Length: 215
Length: 215
Image (cartoon, rainbow over all chains, first blue to last red):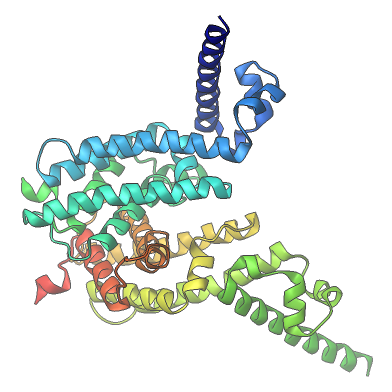
């Protein structure tokens, strides 16, 4: 009987912790890491702040966990495209298009994951996931180079260039949505226009034919 | 006589302020913005911390000024190359090579200017200078597109991609020197290797022939 009570309690704790993480993720997706305070989160979940601290040690640790959950989804989405069916060029294009669409439709979350100033615990996670993106590109670049469809020598440098180009074009301060929000009169580009420009840039950069050139 | 004393005093103040800014720049180049404290700076200059505050209002303002001075030098260096002699492809290559060499030889300063977490005052400057780099690329891309040597449609997106690729390949956490410092066994690439990979990546990305392809 004592055992059963404990098991039930553990189940309840696990369920509550999941609710906490999802509520924290929703908060970051809505307002960035700056909006993730323990007090506001406790209110979202409907528990006392003191109870919240029984489930998460501190804000830094919580932010790092939220970062990891959200980033792993992005890495998984990119991996599904770049390891999916099709030739390497198509898979690179598909991965970029998918990444662009996700960043476009979850702008605040993309900013939080890629560019928002964050606590050191989160910065460590950011480094880890930035390497994970780069690693996926390295894998694809090597495969494409072996098949003769990509022409790259320093795969690590090229992967870094790709990660930088993608982040700046889609999320950073020079990305069209960021500039349109800041500068009156900046042309409002569509996702399709930005995504197409990015795909063309990256395919050419790795020595593949761009979609137009193939036609 | 009173006028002369005042003029002399103003000259002395101007000279001291210049010494303060140079000492602050040297400190940032050596240890990043984190090493820029008013106390340490006063010691470097050889004045009391109280006197330092007569010449600079506070640390945020000083950091922003140092950032602007150092970034303007980088923008000027890039401008000299991209507006210099030669065809647009050569000028893009020359600008990238120069930027790469400067970042390589002043690694800590490059990190401070591009990637170090900084105060909000400095972040504003960073945005301003990031736009200045992008603007130089936009100008060159438009010129090259008009001459038919570059093939780009969304010049602003392509300029953002270039800025991102350069920053990540040379300075960010995925850049070869950063990875070599972090990971045992990461190949120690030379400046020439990284610079060449970056130039090839960027020239191809804008639809120009890469140096090899031209030969």
